[in-house]
Image 1 (spheres, rainbow, N blue to C red):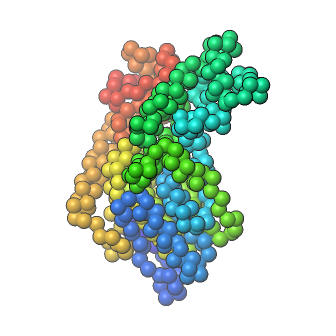
Image 2: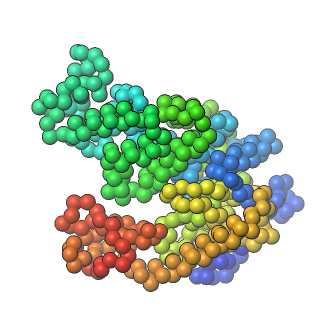
Length: 426
């Protein structure tokens, strides 16, 4: 309670009030300060959470009395992997397990097509993005395989000159798979994956759809591939990686009620658990990188307050160092520094250098938010006009890169425009 009060006091636009605990310290057998753990990597962070959960359950705490919360679904990936390795049962609320999400299955199917050219992967991605290879043409290929044998991909190659495949992008799909099939053994998996997402048009499709959550999941899969490459050494090849992820995508955890709860903080609103872990307490993760104003940052701090107050007996806050192309270097969240040190039990002391770099980053972020509040008077959905490009509609605002994504009426694909572009609201 003191942790939550200390946090929310940093909001300026609020009526001052403090929560009061109703359970005294001597009636809480697990009473302790809020635990704060700083990890050297996302895997170490996940292992800490898993180990602490195991300790609690060994002390008689039922798994369903424990909740692992996160700001966005993609943060659960490394935690899910460790829980599955340690055979700790969990239930993921309001979302699919990481490796069961559509964009993850699609991406892995592209990698499997490169390595194995199997029929299941073929059926999943031959028309994703759209290549005009619909049900009628798939039925033709299946009938050909029934009569002549072989794979669906072989059938497509053998029948590429058939008029049924005119006006499709079947030839470019064949070239994509064949080209990478010849070269993938000489490429790092992460390099192959990035090129494949670009060459196939899959990542561009998601950007056009404006699905930031799905793009975040792809970025997290890239991070998973990188971690695999770092840890695997000489055995690091595409086939072994695909076998590795199959363990997670096909996991069969025991069915019982004694499961740890995994959910986003939004999904946890109105719920309380004796023990709560909040993972991914890093800048650009929580608070989200989408925050584009000081008022939005205060709203994000209120969401952190919601997360902190889900805990009835003990709260754990965790974050990890690291670097990713989506978020840059991971600094501890301002929502950690917002809490007075006397309320936190630091399991790992932060170096003075990291503290200073983090505070510098947060100060610079706040300055940028102040500048953007002066610049931005547009929101997604607003109609705008440009002297040359004409009228359009704002699809997204990227506060990190300081760009708008605008769908203009006379241009087929959306365009990214700088905040400095001469755009006027209609």
